[in-house]
Each structure stands twice: as C-alpha cells, then as structure tokens.
Length: 148
Image 1 (cartoon, helix red, strand yellow):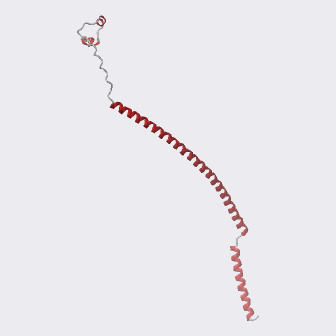
Image 2 (image 1 turned 90 degrees about the horizontal axis):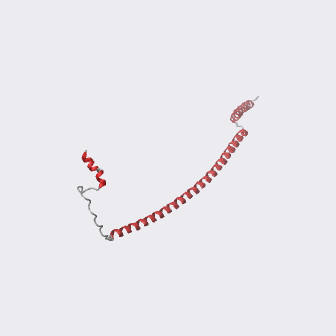
Image 3 (image 1 turned 45 degrees about the horizontal axis):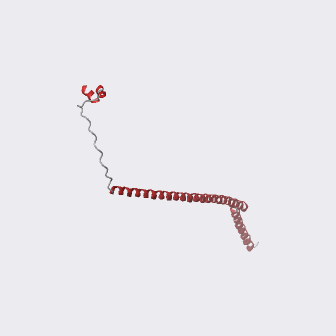
C-alpha cells in the first residue's frame, strides 16, 4: 500500500469514529415524538376542560351578581320609599306640633276668663262645741290617743 492509501485509511477511520460519536449522542438525546405529542395533547384537552368549567362558573357568578344587583336595587327603592313616608310623617307631626304650640302661645297671651270667686262656706265648729249624739258614743282617734 502506498503512503497515500495509508493516510486515506486513517482519515476514513477518524471519520467513522466521529460519525459513531455523533450517532451515539443523537441516540441518547433522542425523544419519542409520538409520546411527547400525546402528552401535550392531553395537557391541551385538560386545559380546555378547565377553561370550560371556569367559563360556566363565570356565567353562574354573573347570573348571581345580576340577581344580587336587582335585589339590592329593590331594597334601595323600598328603603327610599320608607324614608319618604317617614319624612312625610315627620312633616305632619311637625305641622301638628307648631299648630299646637301656636295655640298654646295664643292661649297664654290672652287674658283668662274672670270667674267670680266661690263663696266661703261656714267654718267648722270648735271642738268645744257640743257633739251630735252619734259622735258622743264613739271616741275619735284624737281623743283615744290622748287617753293612752
């Protein structure tokens, strides 16, 4: 074999070893694309089901919110109506109070009627005056306290 032939054999052997190393690296780092795509498809389907569930939850929460807003609005209207009726009642009571107060002021300013004084009745007789027959038989409370 000639010298050039020997060099070519060595070069071919180096390339073979290089190709062997590259193929070994590729084989060890190789992933099974079929299982990887199946796993990703499963993740996508799981995320889609979660998205649908969350969308349905959002719809129910929106319906609950609308109902709560309607209830709140009705409660506000009811309380405003109650407030309005109470304010009207307060105004009525204030008008009655001011009318009564003005009547009272007029009555206090006007001179009262001058009624004749009642005649004086006869005074009670003194204890030294004779008693009636009935009262003699019964001792009075004051006389019984004097005896003791």
